[in-house]
Structures are given as C-alpha cells and as structure tokens.
Image (cartoon, rainbow, N blue to C red):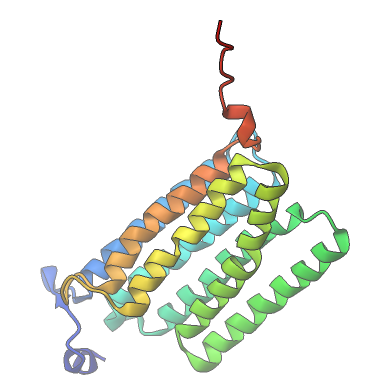
Length: 234
C-alpha cells in the first residue's frame, strides 16, 4: 500500500512517525464532520422540533459520520485500508435517504408518498450494492444527484410555491448551492497538489450545509409574514 501511494504521488506527512496521507483532505473532511454533527445535534434537540427537523438531523448525523470515516480513509489509509472509503460512501447514501424522508411527508397525496418512500428505499439498496460491487465514487455522485436533485429539491420547490414558506425556500437554496462543490470536484479544480479539489469542495460544502441547516431551523412561515407592512402616507 505504501509503495503504491508513493507511485501515485500522494501527499503525506510523518509527524512522530505516524504516516498521514492527504493531510488537508483529512482535516477538511473532519471539519465537515464536526459542523455536520453540530448541525444535526442542534436540529434534533430544537425545542420545537418537527418531522422535518428530526429527519434532517439524521441527514447531518450520517453526513458527519461519513465525513469522519472518509477523512480517516484519506489520512490513515496505510493503516485502515480502502474499505473505509466504501463505508463512507455508503453512509453518504444513508444521509441522502434522511433528506428524502424529511421531504416526502410534505407531499399531500398519501399514495405518492408511499411510492416515493419505496423509491427511496430501493435507491439506498441499489446505491449500497453498487458501491460494494463497483467500488467507485460515481455511485455516490449518481445517488446524491438522484436523491437530492431528483426528489428532495422538487418537493422543497413545490412546498415553497404552494405556501411561500421561508423554510423551504432556504433549504432549496442550500441544496442548489451544493452544485458548486460538485463542479469543483468534477472539474478537479485545485489550488495545488496539497490543497486540491477535495479540500476546496469540502470547505465550500460547509457553507452549503449551513444554508440547509438555517433553512430547517427556520419557522414554517410564509414569506409575506416577515414583510413589514408599510405605513400609509398622510
């Protein structure tokens, strides 16, 4: 493993004899994990927590565990091996599943809710199976696009258009903003070989997750309710 990493020119440091590969990817991944777990904790223990907040807290919890596991794989792959990457990818699928479960109850038709829930379960199973079978990050990207852009975003958009809800507008903006780190990762835009596309996308992702978090915390009120009425002119 060590010889293979050297041939691939993977960055590494050796503090106190500990071999740490891709140190910035390790640190930024763990930073994402810290923020995600904090967001999940705050949402779960919110004094007026409802079904949306509970399931979004699950999204952040699994995203935090996935980032913690992924960061460990990037930083300590010499010790833990590649299976930690696979575990992180599957955990990301559970996070997407949590976002879907937070959004599906917003659909008014019970039959459509049932269909979407079944689809979400099938999606999670297929995603996990494809990760174990193909061992490719493409499975994560396809699953995230299908779940977040194909299911969660349209429901949030519909809810916003139906009720003009502040909460759903901000959540939708947070979901759309995640296109930025996805583009950074796909284009492999890097500052240098030490701070690469993984690290930059992680930093931007924190801001995107914060936007979703702020949306979920927001009271489910119409936009018109926060617009101050103007005083009639004399």
